[in-house]
Image 1: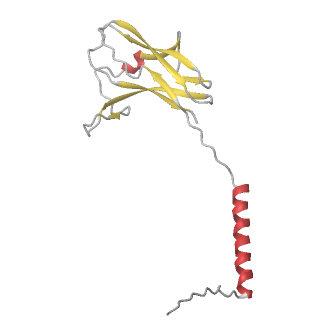
Image 2: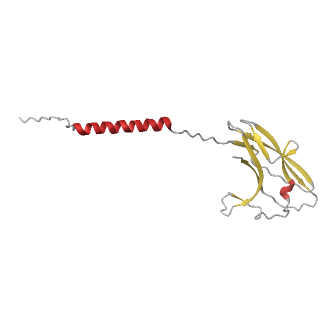
Image 3: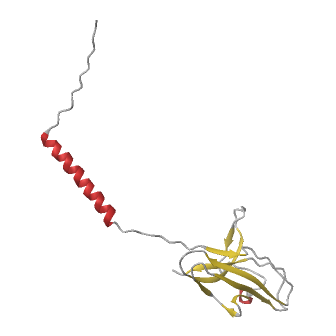
Length: 165
């Protein structure tokens, strides 16, 4: 009868190297604790806005004065100051539904003064910026005044609310 036996012998430790491994482990633990306890914390806060209606389409025959309501909501927990701009756009060259904003020297229209006839109003006052408290909602008006001599044309633009940093 053949008998197999297995004897497990624990590895022999070198007394000189055992202290080095322990010192290395303690050193790494101390570095980790220092990094966790004393590391600077960075909290990024975002701005969340809601704009209604998202699209406004107006058809008008001059002379006329048009007012379209616009509501902006601050959905974040911090106050925000916003600059208000009107930016003309056109379809992008990719022909995939994206738009391309135009610079002032790129904008060609039947009336180069059209944006002087468009205003954003807070009740009766023309505004170019607005400050919203946390979770505040503000009703604004898009006002367009077209004189009798206004050439008939299509104008495409966005009302851009840009956060001041």
